[in-house]
Length: 264
Image 1: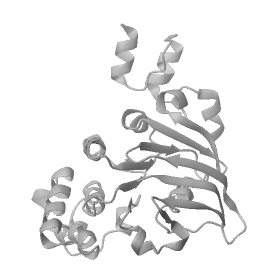
Image 2: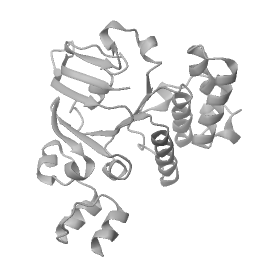
Image 3: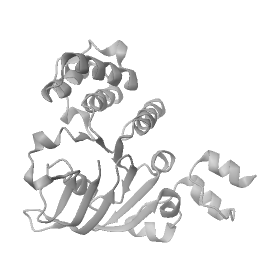
């Protein structure tokens, strides 16, 4: 399911124009990271995808639906959104009820709900925590519960808002594994992130925003290699990318595998 954004503009009630004429196309199945400093417009942009915000001007299409003509509830069947802070998202008495709520609310059959919930538990390694209250879990695992609750809805598009914030290396690896599995299923995965190393290792397309406009958009290797342009939005390329440049490597490298290959 494609996302089409045409000349999108959004002005907050305070008069601040947070999005200033963005036009983008995101194809079904793409893995896209959106980067930029605080205030660049990242969250404002993606909250137009599920109708949490409505354009001041321009349009956002999710498949054949124009978002301003659809309710947030209806758009939830196409766009899943994992909030940065899981405590803003969780409300059920136990993990299994939390994960079941989304697909049940979408009207799926019991058989499909059971299948989707089982899949979400497996993806996030929450199977042995299914009966626990989410708030009895540490923050890192509450994040996984929030993630699982969205995965269980089986939406074609999934948005992660700063997925690695506050996560240890084990949970970051779990999140990366979830993204890889969603990629295999052909899901569109979009993330907002300041974790540029996570971005480089897990996403093939990077969009850099600055002051409500697109500064760069393209394959991750091309975007992350433009250190001077990225500096305008206070984003540093990954450590290995910078090291490769200092060593004079011809290719822009994004991760350890590419770095070692280039060194050979």
